Image (cartoon, rainbow, N blue to C red; front, side, top):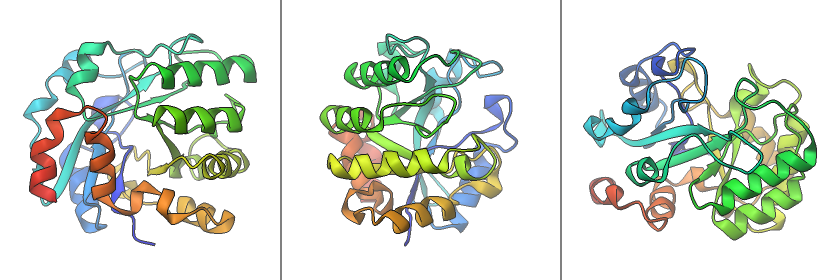
Length: 248
């Protein structure tokens, strides 16, 4: 299975990652990634970049070494009302917005509260991807989340790092979430969640999971960069027109 996109990567700007944007792009090019999302942590995460970092992303070239670059963020869900740590003006500037739970930002409580927060974040219209939803520290009702993702046109991420170096115990939850996405005819995206360049574009665990459960390939947006671009453009991302014309 050839994967053409990586929708979740970090650079040294996140404060606890170890590679530059240029190093990540170089790794992506070697691995055949055609569309790479730059998604450093949002400002509520300790050590994350200042909000100006994200507002200045317009200076990043659309294509570097043949790899299309998506200017994005991994925003934090900051409360159980589903609010995230960026405002609507920044939302309009960015190509892709992930949202996820992180313990240093929001302490885990109950499955019901976690589920309600995710659904409200999706319903806000401010997010494009729900990231690492298999995190056992933040259990969710997978069927409710998958149903909301399909209704709100939000991608659900399967995160390769959740199987290797982060969030131990995620595998069973990730499988259940992916199965729920298929039931509700939603869409999955793969994110490496790379915090060092050697992990950019690595999806061995994600691929093994979807093959094991028989996830439909037509619902896996990561295998076709044009599908991801089209998905984002129809979500009112006008800044993507130049990238779409150049790559497609």
